[in-house]
Image (tube, rainbow over all chains, first blue to last red; front, side, top):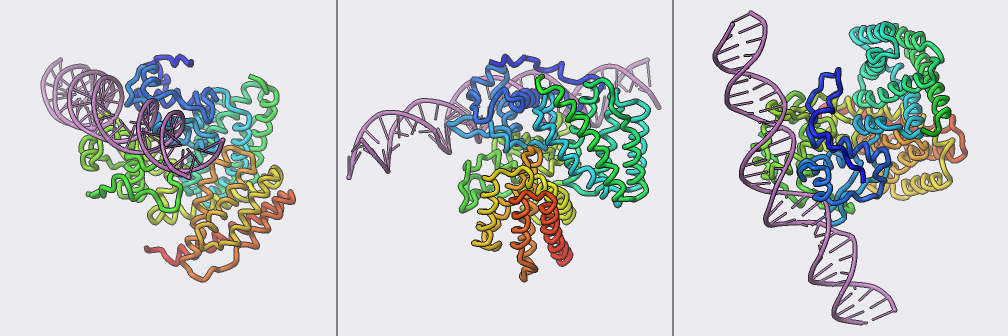
Length: 254
Length: 254
DNA sequence: GTGCCCGTATTAGTCGGACAAATAGACGTG
DNA sequence: CACGTCTATTTGTCCGACTAATACGGGCAC
């Protein structure tokens, strides 16, 4: 089952992006298998067929396949042992906060529980981060935030540039907290931010212009007001959560 | 440089623990190299010597070495490209929230910035998590929390069992939020919890009995009081942060 | 019948050695 | 001096053999 298209090289490099590395095979396999796992195609507890057969089916060498498995194991998705084989781990052991795992989760329709959880996490993290950022941000970071918001206004949230600027704004806030673990959450938050706009686009009519809220957060951070920043960010994320929740219950089924 | 002791098999399985798998070589290499990187032995931007030489120096096959590198790359610690070699990534790209990376960071003396950041993160996450847990916890989870606290009292925080029960208590709270991404943070929080006791032990006199604070959190969660739970947890973590901060400034130098 | 021990088949793990592909940097050319 | 090309180096991929761990089952003692 799962014919596993033989893309091999080529076809994977997303257009318009710089393309760091031209898709090494082990990376492609890890990606495809990773997506298959997080999307439930292989269920927790399930055992993958043995390395030799599977690698033959994928038409790659056993070495390349094994390296792919090592990647997945490093992210907590699988675990392999002699004699037993390679088994899909229970979801609780997946490193959901890993940028790749998160990206893979969003490549197919993510589970509502994940989206809901992600927004709750945003609601916890981002207001606190905004408050810290208001106390610690550097002038250079303020500049980058301002430019990000201006780019958002210029391009709009329908364009890829606009969405990227939105994520850049939120990421810079996390960076301004000067807290390494918080910065590591940037990709997680970014995934949440990305999906805010996705859900907004689904229900065509955009419910409210997000820019005033963003500027309010920016002003508070720039002027060094932690509590104002916290309040403004809370409002921003709550609005996003509200919109998303409505969009979600509109589409319980795909 | 870095003679890289030839432990090979044996010696790595920590006594007293079940030992899932008897230390596969690629795992050992990944562990040793990972620790060397997070401890600054290899600095960001630095390029590791080529695969053939390095694997020979470690006395392992190139395949095993490559699998180790794949693991490190999956966790954002390194990136390898043809011709350039394998380069240590800037710290901002490390997946600090990855359980392994975090554990490696704490195997040698972690940087004060990391410890401080971790406690700040606890102060953000845990009160909010406690509030959610108070609303969503199952009876079974309440039982597990109670048993964890009783185990803490029985064994004391000087014993390994007591510390494990402490982490179990905090992990169960996260589990009770019914939020997958929050649950993924359990190992991160656990690392912070573990180091609270480490710092307490350093300054021999324990500054204050932590049990009453823990029970207050438990009572609030068990009785379904979100705001009481949030307040109690805030107090608990602030106390821990305070103690740790003092211990840290006592020992700026190792 | 029951429980334990040990053998064996199966699977991942390790090895080494060859060849392919990408590419940074040197080199030549206009 | 700019720009394309060539080359050496490094990772990437493949293959096939052997090793090591271990789940399972069959036989043995009780």
